[in-house]
Amino acid sequence: MKSGSISISQFIAILMLSTGLMNHVIIIPTLLDAAKRDAWLSVLLTGVIMILWAALLYVIIRRINKQHLVHYLMERIPPIVVYALVGVICIYLFLIFSITVNDTINWIKLSFSPRIPIFVLSLLLTTICCINALLGVQSISNIATILLPFVILLGIFAALATVPHKDYSLIKPILEYGMQPVWNGVLYAGAGFSELVMLLFIQHKIKSKISYPMLLLLIFILVGLTIGPLMGSIVEFGPDHAAKLRYPAYEEWRLITIGHYVEHLDFLSIYQWFSGAFIRISLSLFIILEILCLKHAKQRIIALSIILIMNIVLNLLPISNILFLFFMKQVLPIFFYGVILFTIVLSLIIALPKRERGLADD
Image 1 (cartoon, helix red, strand yellow):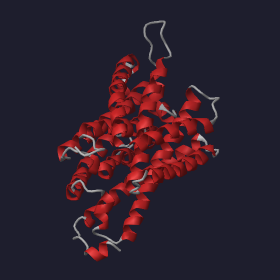
Image 2: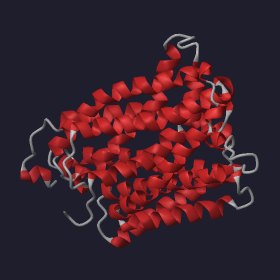
Image 3: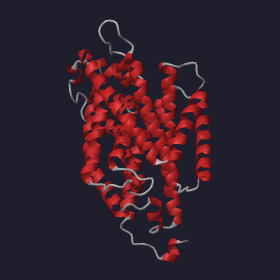
């Protein structure tokens, strides 16, 4: 096992927390708005599409064969093209990072801590995640492995405790408005599922062999993580009301009581959200450092400092929930299409032979 490498089970733990937050929380409002009561069908259809896409991703990963992605590309295409691709990847990861921080801070302000200044929340959250990113992928995976079991247990508890509030007749009529709303929802669900591309960016850090059945397992897990809170929101609040909620998954916790005297158990969702946000932010920052091939600690600290300052400035901008959701509706389909296009481009690049030594060193 190489220093700084992780097992495939550790990567699954990272993915379940990182992309789990995306699919379980962040995309739910836009998905419900786009597909309403048929949003769960969008998730199933997206899962089928991603099975086909995963085959392409698997071929790319096999051809790269544990090499650093940037080093592999440098051997086959001109450096200027590699730099352009690296720039696009970094923008994608920075947006993931910024959206997660912004949504987490907004949720904190709305739910349980409205008086703490945004600057303080942003600085505290991003600084802790920067430290974790600097410690490397092993630190991220070890923490994810510790946090995940409790997140799963809380999720099971929430699903079972809200059973009395569920009315499954609310998912009918199915396809009331035809397939168009379902296809609209695929664009948003696909943005979450396509984050499997993260595996491509850190495959050189995974000691285990990456197989196609493993990718199918990851897709199955993401389907479950998405469809659970999505259907829960629909059958508990109704499709119209659920689509108007800012954080449907969080609102489900407010329905939970134990007997007649124990209420307000929604504080337990804080652990779930913070676990996902911490791993998600740390992972996106770590991959940015990896893609930029920054080896020295000083270079990494400078890069993270710049990212941290940029993010704090963005969080201090007066962005309303309406504007944020409008932005999400525009950017999530771009994420989906962009990742698909990126993997298609890579599939063409891996067919190219190695460049001559002199050309590769230009």
